[in-house]
Length: 128
Image: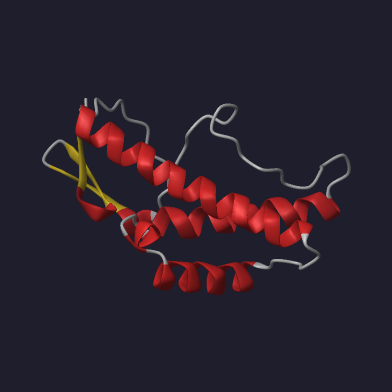
């Protein structure tokens, strides 16, 4: 199911969402690094990578696990399509300057209550 709302995040929510995006971008780039070293990162291997990285890295633990899993799922799908869909290249590194921030939450990562969008890890955004 897809929802379309206009959000008006405050400065605190913007900072939280941007830091969440940087964590997801880091994981994407780590998956690209895995693929470039010759390993074939499947979603199962990437899930283990996420678990291991979150156990050793407090910065990743500060963020929500849902968008981190979703970015790795998207990466695995993109890598698979690069082998099966004609004209698709391999996934590339996401740079801070060239990539627009976007996060993907599954249904267990958010809720809408009282005119507010409540995301995982306590990010609350008013909905218009």
